[in-house]
Length: 91
Image 1 (cartoon, one colour):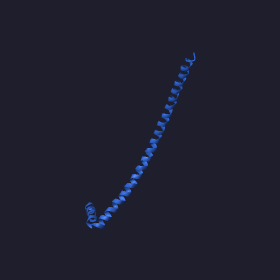
Image 2 (cartoon, helix red, strand yellow):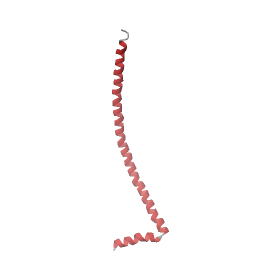
Image 3 (cartoon, helix red, strand yellow):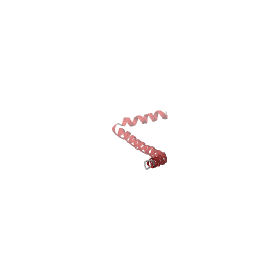
Image 4 (cartoon, one colour):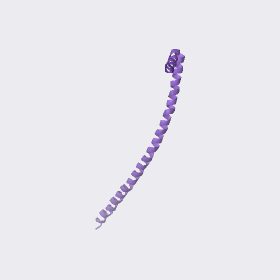
């Protein structure tokens, strides 16, 4: 008789383990909701990186504008060629 209530007490342990797994599923759902809320944060971080990319592109454009300055300082014919191209577009 003392052996029979032990499996009966083991069944609520499995039920409590199932209840813990059922309570772990809303935790995983809340973790998924946090990851879903983290995705717009990553999208806003991606938008910040996209807004940072035009800053780097403008920095790259500054470096690209600095390169014709060095090219025009190195070779005036290289700076004269876009002027001749702009003269051709004006014609």
